[in-house]
Image (cartoon, rainbow, N blue to C red; front, top):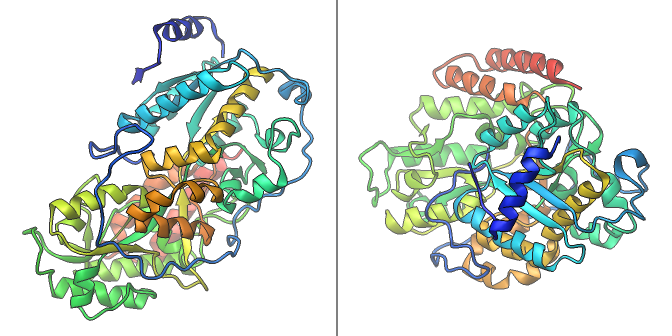
Length: 492
C-alpha cells in the first residue's frame, strides 16, 4: 500500500484528515504496460485481423434494465442538490491501481484538481489489489473509517450497501444541475448504465470509468494449417478445432509442454463467459438465486470436461496471461481485452505468428459478451463531499478523459463518442477496435450480489471435481445449493 500525491502539502492534509475523520479482482499489472502519458508507444501488431466484427443492438437477456426518469431522494442524505455547493471539498479516494495504471490515474487527478471550477481536491490512496482494498473497507465499516469514494466491484458494493455505507447514485444522474441529459445518457453503452444497478436494492451504487470484456484469442496461422478459414462460430466447431490442434501441434511451438486446443483458468470468471454466450446467467434477474446449474451451465461445463478428458484442453500455466498462447502451445485462449498488450508481447517474443481475437462461439442470435470491471462508489459522508465525488466521477467519464484512460490502460470506454478520439489507437490496434464494436452487442455480467465472494471458491472446487471426471449435473446442483445458502445469509 502506498500513498502518492502531487504535493507534500496535500499529503500533510491527508494525514491530518486520517486522524480527525470519522468517517477479473483487478487484472494483475505487468511491467509491459505503457508509460503514463496521453500518447504512448505500444508494440505494433501488423498480423492482427478481426474477421467478423459483428455486433447486435439487442438489450441483455435477464439482466437489469436501466430506467431513466425523475428520482425522489432523501434531502437529509443528499442535501438539496439544486442549491448544494461542493466548492472546496476534499475527497479521499481509495483504489486498487498499481504501477503505470496508478501513475496515469494520479496524473489525471492532478489535472482535475488544477482545473475544476469548484476547487475540489481529490487525494488518492492505492491499496494495490482489490482484495486488500476490500479488506480495508471491511475493517473500516464498524467505526466508519472510510473514504469518500472507492473503486468497487459490484458484488462487493452490494456488501457495503447492505451495511448502509454506500449511497445510490441515481439522484446525481438525474439532477438537472449535476446529472446527465437524455442525449448524454444515450451516448453511454447500455452495459455502462446497467451493470451497477444492484438487483438486491433496485438502485445504482456505482458508475464505471472503464470496462473490460472477455474475448477469444486465437492463433490464425495454426487455425489455417488445421483447415479453418475463420474462427469457430459454434461450440461444436470450437471443440473440433481444439482437438485437431492437440493432435497436430503448431510447427512454431517453442514449448516442450503438451500442446492444447484451449487453455483455461479453473475459476468462476473463466467459466461464466461459456454460460453467458449460451444465453444463460449465473443468477436470476432479481438476484435472489443462482441459476448456473441450468441447461447453459450443463452444456458449458460438459464441454470443458470433454475437452480435458480427450486431452484437447489444459490448465493455463502462466499467471499473467498470454505466455502459453505466445509460445504456440495453445490454439485458443479466453481472456480480457485488457490483456491485449500482454498477448502481443508474448507472441512477438515467442513463436511470432499471425493471431487475432473473436467473440466466443454462441448459441444466441448474435455474440453475447461477458463485460466486467470495477466501478466507483460513493460512501455516506456529507452532502457536499458526496456531490464533489460525483463530479470527479462525471469528469472521468467525459470523452476526452475516457480517451486518455483507455489508451493508457487498455480498458474499454463507457461512452460511444469516445471513438471520435481513438482513431489513431484503433489504427494501431485493430483487435481493440473490434472489441469496441462488441460493446453494443448483447451482454451478461457476473453476479452483482452480496454473497458472490463466497460463491466463487465453491465454483472453483466444483470445477476441480468435474474436470477430474465428476458428474456434471450433480456437481452443478450442489454448487448452486451452497451458493444460494451464502446468498441468503448475505441478502440485505
